[in-house]
Image 1 (tube, rainbow, N blue to C red):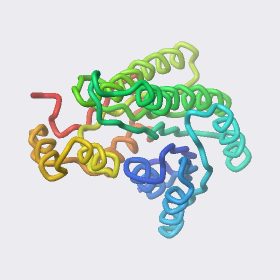
Image 2: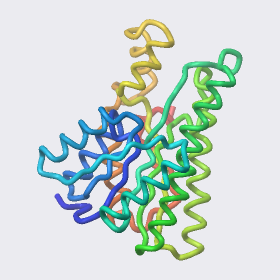
Image 3: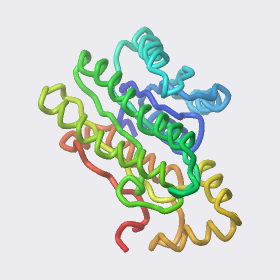
Image 4: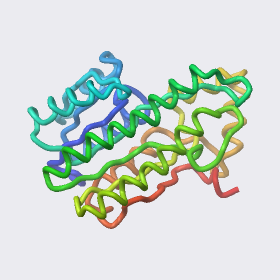
Length: 256
């Protein structure tokens, strides 16, 4: 307990799935959480769960594609807490579609949320963190930021962008001695509403889930808390010598 005691964390996409799991675990370990999401209903539920367990949390509506909303969010965060120690760039979307089937509209929307959103988060996060002594930026990429999957053309491209942007941010902050670390997490298939929707879009949910499980040598799909534990490690001072790294949480998917 207390691995991030007294730290201030901002989590994007905090309303469901990985974002909610990360928010709950960081709060359990002592951080105050600024829960952001495009959906007020879902994020307010995350806040309610945190407060119900005795933690500290606030909600702020945020479309990660909108730099104006980022500015307002950071202003609200500064007024509430005065600093930022942990930034979890988690918000993301996925469309099922190969290079022949995916539309330009789907491509642009995916890149706007998954790549532009992380770019803006890092940009605004660095600006606040460097003025308050440093921090940890954690970007959610994917195994599909390392490999390609036929039916996720736009998603793979966007998550590859997150992977290498993370390294550029880490290098910049290290050179400037900002004491800001930046790392990416690369989950395998984690059972979230987004994963369920993607598998349904491919065909029979039961068949597609079984196929997904078969790709993971460990024999099952991950759960949001499996990724949240990696977020916690990177958010804590335990990882003070880790930056620019690719943290794979994939049940062995990439090893075969």
